[in-house]
Amino acid sequence: MNFKVPRGTQDILPSESWKWQRVESIIRDVCDKYRYKEIRTPIFEQTELFQRTVGDTTDIVTKEMYTFTDRGNRSMTLRPEGTAPVVRSYVENKMFGYADQPVKLYYQGPMFRYERQQAGRYRQFVQFGVEAIGSADPAIDAEVISLAMELYKRVGLKDFKLVLNSLGDKESRTAHREALIAHFKPNIEELCGDCQARLDKNPLRILDCKVDREHPLMKSAPSLADFLNEESAAYFAQVKAYLDDVGITYELDPNLVRGLDYYNHTAFEIMSTASGFGAITTLCGGGRYNGLAEEIGGPASPGIGYGLSIERLLLAMDAEGVAFANDPELDVYIVTLEENAHRKGFKLLNELRSAGIRADMDYMDRKMKAQMKSADRFDAKAVIVIGEDEVEAGNVQLKNMADGSQEKVEDQNIVTTVQEKLK
Figure 1 (spheres, rainbow, N blue to C red):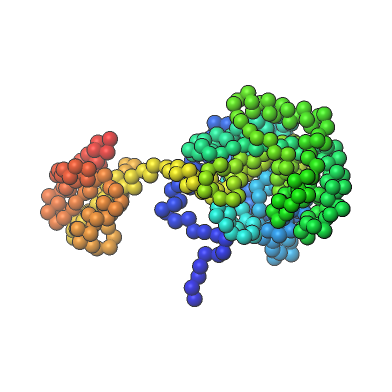
Figure 2 (cartoon, helix red, strand yellow):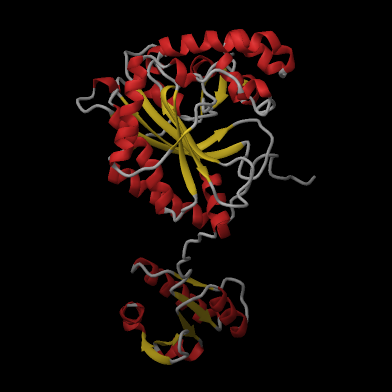
């Protein structure tokens, strides 16, 4: 029987995993500069957590979740997004009682959604996200957005843009909801079945429909911007002012609603503008979610955050031709020519590694020529050759692979000599 990787997933091989490690290192550094601390939550949670927070009319909940019944007859779901688990942890662990608010957190890990695989989108994907919980200051909105923008700059991207909208508070959304129902209801049969089901439950989701996005009803739908009350409009104006102050440019899109029910006030996406990136240009999306903590039993704790796919970040790098410089794979390769030399080489290998030197040797009993070819493939800076004569004499031959020079080095001086050469 032939086993293959499950549909919608991928193996990240060593030839690619080092790029992921570079991105992860940049993420940690940027988050450290902004004073965001890592949080790690379980890969699965109670299904109701996502139903209550993400929304039972969203595509994620109705079509995409991986849900199973555990041995205790409890419904569990592999996490499809990161915000709900983080807010659950914030409430459960009483982080709202911390002296320093907002609590600034970041996470990174696999998420799971059963959707059609396409470029940069998988059923298991790695999401990085940040959450700032406990403050309703519009300045924290601007900080969260600036962290995302800084991350994309740090990995070397240039062709991307920030798109903003305000979803307003509950009062604004209620007024907009009534206007949407009045707009769509007379011709709702022209739209897809999902849109028809959403009309009375959550008409805002209709604007997020992928099937009918080009329908004339969408283009003429009432804009949420026209229904923002004074408080919501003032909040959004402050967010934009803070972004202006730090030189972050943005576009306004009144149709940007995001795909999760918990968003309100600020909503944003960062999109790739690189040619050839693909039809789906979103790299990152997020927004404010005041009321989410209360929804799962916690005290009022306004928050804002976002999530981004590492796969799509790497895809954007490829589209722009951005590449990380790959470090040389190896400092020293040890070539041995007979059994006693092999034992001496193995002992030396461990001494070199203990001294912080990247070293390797042959384990396939190959001839000297084949071992030297391995050293070339690994881009080794130096080669140590050990044969029967070197075992008896208590030395090795050290070859500089850059200029081909070679010298004899006594056993007791090998590690220090190699260290000096590598400098």
